[in-house]
Image (cartoon, rainbow, N blue to C red; front, side):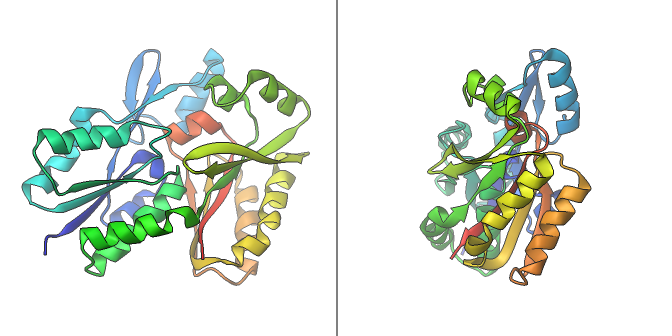
Length: 283
């Protein structure tokens, strides 16, 4: 049986530790500022990006992975005749999956499989880690893909945003809606559903209290989750806020693993600083 290699893109928001631990390869998407393109996670940090965005009163643009970069990362695994499974950001949000398909086609390689996560951030990451664990168990590429596809609708990905300014600048929400939400100090819950972002409950008041209310509202669902792992993914929140959410999840005495990760450049460019999400697989 051929070796199965798991590949993802930089929107998975997995830490370098997890990427190394599970032997995952990452293809970066691009962040564009001042007409110059940077590889997400390699050439630009979210904090550098925020500084530029605030100075220029706009948000960076983002773009799919480049063909050349994708091919350079995939080529060694194709040369080794590995079975390659690429799990990336929702096809409704990026054409990166099509770039990967084109690399396979141009190299006449029929053992490179593209899985649309229908998600973003660690909503992708959860599926990538699951695939890596299945590969380590010796499952075939086809078996892994069948399991990941069957569980795709069980991924629960949501976030509370501090400000809608970044989503409005990037065309992901109406500017009037953003202005109104910011003026009224509303912190909307953004839910990923069927590969797209929708707005859920809106929390009033300060960011910290909004994030804590958001987490507590999820308690019943969290206790019906797959208890293997839960992610706290943020785009630059205070340690105090992160610790409170981690404490809340710990006190549920339910999850085997509570993982804190910071969102990369592409995700941060759309949601802005002060965003935090709790992401997991439902049962």
